[in-house]
Amino acid sequence: METHPIHSMAKQFHQHFTRGADYFNRDKTGEFIISEPTESLLRIAMLESAWMMDNITIRDIDRANGQAIEIGCNALHTGRSLSGRFKKKLSASGTPFELVETDSCVALSYEQIGILTNINGFDEFVKTISVFFGRAFTLDMLKVGFNGEYAGLPTDPAEHPKGQDVNKGWHAIAREFNKGSQVITEAITLGKDGDYPHLDALANQLIQDKIPEAFREDPRLVVMVGAELAAKERLRLFNGGDRSLSDAAAAQMLTSSVAGRFAFVPPFMPGKRLAITTLENLHIYTQKGSRRFRADFVDDAKEYQHAYLRNEGYALGNGFLYAAVDESAVTLL
Image 1: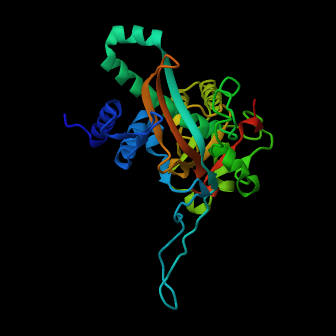
Image 2: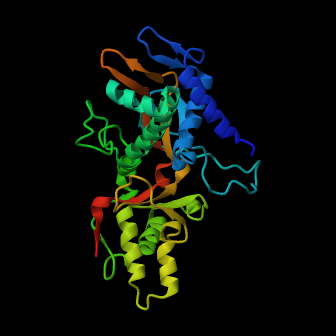
């Protein structure tokens, strides 16, 4: 079977990373400054680590702060004019962003290294740790994207296990955008005899009230459903009047369609949140030249450390293209 180019490049990245000297410029502190070609390989390996990352917008940018820009919109750009050429001005409705120091690291004690290398051999140990690290920090990026509230110093992972204090994520950014117009925070009830009888009704209302008309029929629009909402809706369908096969099928298909749009349960999103956007509208930025990698045994700590330091931040390409109900507003009936 022919190897897909993405897989091939990801494999090259692993080889470059574990080999080190020929592909990274080591500075006096023992860290590595990653060259631009290897930064591209890093991004490919990262994209391979979690399926959702394939569709999120990940960009390298020069500045540490600024305004996110998503060129254009879905409005009509074709027509005629009585005088001169027809034209439609491009719109820019992105949110502000600020990149902050972000550090990811996994560490294994000398004792743990001895146990693992005896089982698999050192080469396999390094490969396993590299794969785990790539997946772990990619999933951390999603945790922060869905749950991040602010950039604290220092962070407290015990108190904030989903990265609430690592950075300001997409939902927190949306709550502040345009005076909070895109996120429902007032109390609503969901269920029989509630404000909304089911998820379809709630999602349809969000789309009609908060998503710009030009995007309402965009095939890229997705509904992200919190796990608790999905479980509640599934139970409602299974407990339907005649428990027909069609109801059972609908329950099984819940996370693939809501309000006629593709829907899914994202990893780490709060259980009672419902959000509608395009995945491309979710942005993660890294400042060019800020990446520092380290993968070696640290004598003073008696640990093998796999670490990745960079300036990173989140933004929405178009703030009006994100509509949600905050989890704190939802009461299930």
